Structure formats: C-alpha cells, structure tokens
Image (cartoon, rainbow, N blue to C red; front, side, top):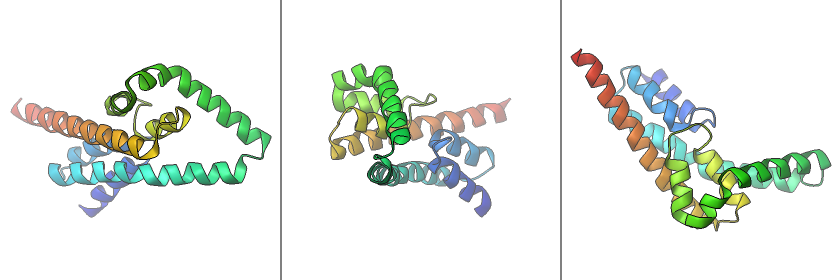
Length: 154
C-alpha cells in the first residue's frame, strides 16, 4: 500500500508524469481514490515553488555561461511561439486553461516556464497554475474512477 502511494507521489511530482499519470497509476493499483487524488494533486502543487526556485537558482548561477544562455533563450522563444499569444490575450484564464488541459507539455512545469517567459506576475501565475492543476487533477481522477467502474460493470 505505502509503496504505491509513494510511487503515486513521485510520479505526480515529476515533470514527466505529473498528476495526470500519478493519479491513474494509484487508482489502477487499487488505492483509495480520494487519497490518491489528494496525494497526486498535492505533489503536483508542491512542484510549483520547487521548480520556480530551481529555475531562479540555475539562472543566477549559470546565466553567465553562453551555452546555458543560448539554450534558455531558445527554450523561451519556443514557449512564447507555442502559447504566448493565447496566454497573453487571456492572461490569468489563459494560463489556467493551458495548465488545465490534460495533454502532454501543458502541465504545471510548462505553466511555470510560460509564466516566466511571458512575465506574468508570480503570485498571479501561482494562482492560475494551481487552479489549473486542481481542475486537471479532478478531471483525471473522475474519468479514471468512472472508467474503472465501467470496466467492472462489463
């Protein structure tokens, strides 16, 4: 039991899985759906301040190196081209929708990067990203749970 919950937490806090993978993992391994939802969503929300701190630290320490600066600028340009217009146009709601949509490369980590690139005020970005994570986690948990119920009925 504890090992699956720990794995749910680790998957949900990682940039490769986030809660979109962690929540279904926990539920499909027979864990309490409410507990899995809370752990997955909580882990994904914990990633926000940690990832922001990590980006701040890397920028302070590595910005003076050309190879880091070039890669950072390239990543920022790609992020700005991909979602910049939508997020800039709709501001808080655009960022929230970007994070909320359960598709690859649209989660909390990319939301933090997009907010930084587009200079969204950090507290506003945290609120938008957090709301997006909560809604996305709720959608994922509900669809996984209902899907499992449907499979059991067959």
